[in-house]
Length: 616
Image 1 (cartoon, rainbow, N blue to C red):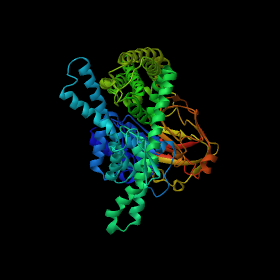
Image 2 (cartoon, one colour):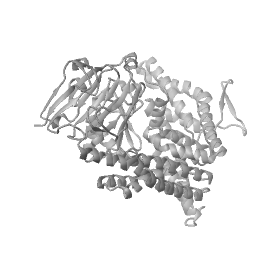
Image 3 (cartoon, rainbow, N blue to C red):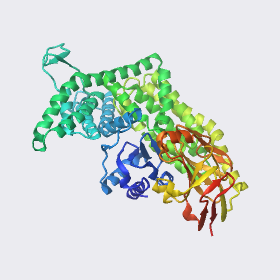
């Protein structure tokens, strides 16, 4: 499937352009803010060639694409009029850590390409001068050093643009604030403060390469500009609104927000440095071992400003070196799976994840291999953690911000490079050994069980004529009572809604758990025989509970027998949150069958027929 066709399919399965408030992309995934999460067809999306995974994370729906994300995003840009920045919502927005992290990611990601280029260029310059391949004092190296340093020295300008886009304010006013931070004020040597109006102290601080000061300042600019835009008549707005916005914003930013951001960043970097100095092995182990989990949750971008602040404060980042060890481990595990697997399809998936993984794009590895094989995931976490511990103990560090991968090794050249190489070797060896040791224990048995289940015909479902039992007991509802067109109009397939009596959901037939939504409110099942696929969806808008009140009893890929308890949930909590608590059961491949009759009204028990299906 080409990128254009993939972009069209993604738009279709997220509910169409009209269901999208805004979207953006990072280096591996599309991030959608949707009007109605219930219109997303995750099951069909996950089947599309080229998609590595889909998930709800916080208030975003994410489509993981790996290295092709930019090309697909460009196709979406060309076929829609969607904005890539957050629109002003009519209702109050959700606040909290997840929202702050999403905003920070949206600001930093567009500014990373030149910074990554600068980091690699600095590494190449070091390599060429260190090995005597180029004259360190020659004009060419001086020029290239200036090019590499420009990205870092003027980093506030880059962030001013992306911050203005994210906060929806004027980019040129934002860059003016960045220019003010970088302006060489003519002050006396040793002077630490200026006084505005003889009263307001302004700290004389070097804001080059800083992250938070300009973000905080542009955030304030957004509200001040909006205030004057509404207050001043349109006829003279262009003249007075920018002037007044800068006159109000600049003193507050320079006296309060910028120093606050600066010292937050400094103390954050010092805190990381303290942890590394206190126990470099422990710091490396924690960062290296948890990175695959952070990527799964979309939380790994929280590490980028920490690494950037380290470089700004100390001239190097040990956190980036730790992240590199994890990247190498995540690429090594699928390589071992490739050699161990006897399944041709699995070998192809594993091999396709190896090269992108070593380059620095690990989503193909995580979503294609590590999520499926627990042993490989454990091995990658431990291998990356141990390698990062060794690298940190031996002084591994990066001298420029770079995407952690083998292709960016020049950015790590300098003091500690030998320790970094040793850490990479340790990561590869430990991950390989552990993957060999753990893969059979956690994965092969599951594969064997799958084959045995199919061979033994445990399902009791005739592929030509099927009677599917209800997975819950309760009261069958009219679909008109479900205030969601996706379900009430049976867009996904034949649908039944049930008001559950006890909050327990059971397997209606012998099946494989094909999909488990991160928020635990929905499960996709595929019958072991006959291939029937059903979606069991608990409530409406329950994704907003983020798993609260749900106790999942199974996991994705697990083989279960009819009657196995899959999930418990708390109907009282759902009602307390003013949400619909109906359990919705959908035959998602309804088009495969000639006739589907379903229960309509009345009380239903676990052994009662929910769907009667004929394939003829």
